[in-house]
Amino acid sequence: MVAEHATSGATDELWFSRDEGLCFEGPVVLPRAMRIENIRVEPKSRSHVFVAHGLTTNDRGLSVTTLVTVDLRRLLGDAVYPLCNQVHPLPRCLVPCAPLL
Image (cartoon, rainbow, N blue to C red; front, side, top):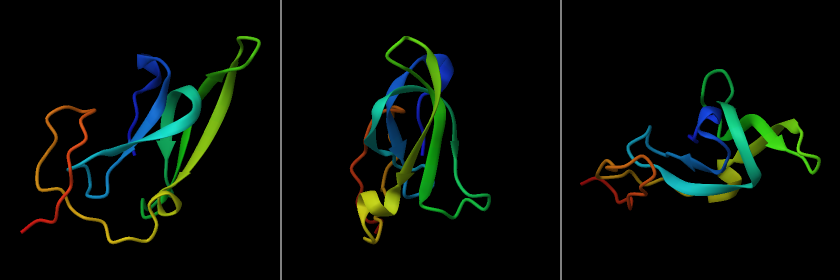
């Protein structure tokens, strides 16, 4: 799971990889834009549930700490995940995934 860092400003997009970063898919659209400071997963990094931690702005213009949970299994189902056969040239570029031969 990746996103722009808080220092780059607010974003409403998260991207994820099913093959350790060879291919990034998405975006997963957040309910509202936030300045993401951290993305967390359980300590052994074996979970399919991620928590994005950052700041949003409320209706009065004040910064509010916000947590957004993303469950990739719920998002994608229990399908077998294909591997990408190429590396994307740009960090925000979605590369079509296909099984390796």
